[in-house]
Image (tube, rainbow, N blue to C red; front, side, top):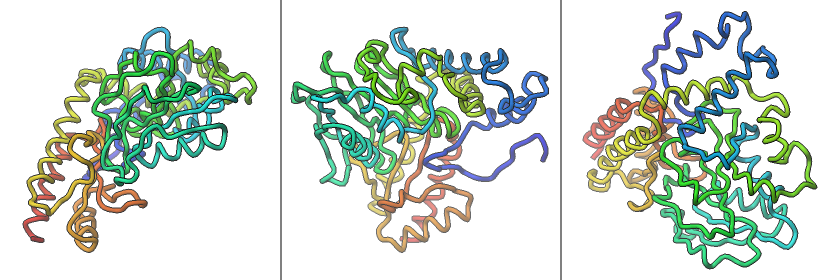
Length: 367
């Protein structure tokens, strides 16, 4: 029906993932003729007052929601988290320094491998030999003296693990965190972080925009002998308008920020995620081994619930029947298989309740 978004789909995709339905409706109404200008958001000049209003509104709402201190810059970049894997070491991994990596999953591995192409690195902690079932125990006191920065990943989408809390940082060593899959789902202690980055396509908006929140004093130490466009200082000095930004993605990001604000902010998102996750984990735990969670209980993610069934054939049947019922995106990552329900901020509680009902009924008919 024109003007309405009607769907019987339950979207559990890991990313790009669900957007709030009200955001999609608002975008439908205003994105293609913004404020009766006759221009869509994607057509107007990024130097125009119309777009600047969108741009700075999105930045300011993000700063407010995450309580970002004034001594941090917020940048809107492109290239996803994958570009940050290279951009961080290009800016801060200078000769004579080493970068320390905490390996908790595939994405932290990729960040480490990319940095290793640029400079010296070492692994501070890892649970790879345990199939990344838990978050590693980390002692920042064991860092080497020439450590340029420590890198960690807050939530691991593929393995379904998440830091329950962050280790206390050494004040002399910067900490860089990939928060792509749980940003805006819980608060961040900015005393413990120096650079936080996130692809927007899971909790903050559509794909195409990357959020980077960086301490200003850290930027002052950045390598100046790198391409201009790869320097954080370049984008900070230009208010993320050094070159044409992804205007449409930033517009929708602003709408998502407004939606989170209306729901009660980041703390409301945290409680919402806890409720949704508890329902799924309880269903897994009470299934007498029919469903088996991948992550250890103390490291379970509130964003990505990963699990297996008794055998591969039963998993295929589960995914087949789930798809027929409208459940989308329940396949585990291609690298490890199994099943995964991604329950980001925009996934309604009612969709999780429907999935739980399906899981219980599937178990009854396949025991």
